[in-house]
Image 1 (cartoon, rainbow, N blue to C red):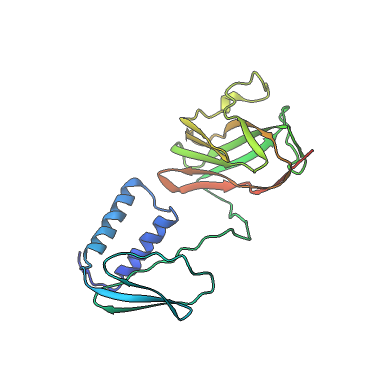
Image 2: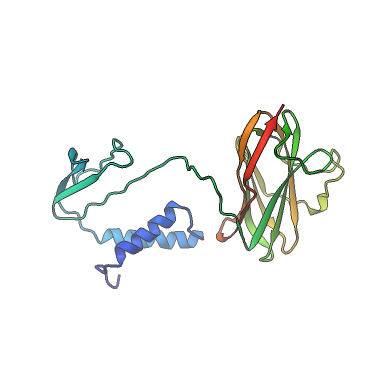
Length: 252
């Protein structure tokens, strides 16, 4: 509003767009302010007439103009892309790439909250992740602790290794496993069961270690990546914890 032609505006727009792309915005209110700011920035651009061409490896691939957007998917990593324009107005472009990372290392850290995961047998003993037998029941114990006092709207995301399947998503009593301390169990607001993960939505009491148990079954033989377990405040992503990545092996 103060200086709509300031040269810092494109960089600010780029920064907000990147934060939206990686889902690092904070509260719903801040999301609204960000959209308002982007809307104001885009409203300053008048519609003008222009045309241009896209070259891939010095060969013209397609012509374009101000009447419609174009999408290209005929280029590959290493191609040289050149865009030429004529007329008035500003042409915007973006490139999206995807793939499977060769390095699957996860940066693990705790910020205001701490979550840890244990894999146990039916007697409550830790199991060897390199020697899980096919058909064996594996009890998953999630331990979570808040360093910020009571926290509301916390989501726990536990990704499963491909060799395990969820069997019982909520062990609410200790009738089957007497060693489970139900006093420390969290009381979820909602539990979402998916094919590759379990999501638990809950509130966390301050400065106490709370637990959540569920059972899985080893169904597929093989070596599998073990994704990290994560906890995060949905309306304050600055409070989060991620830990426990590794590998598991299911044997006969």
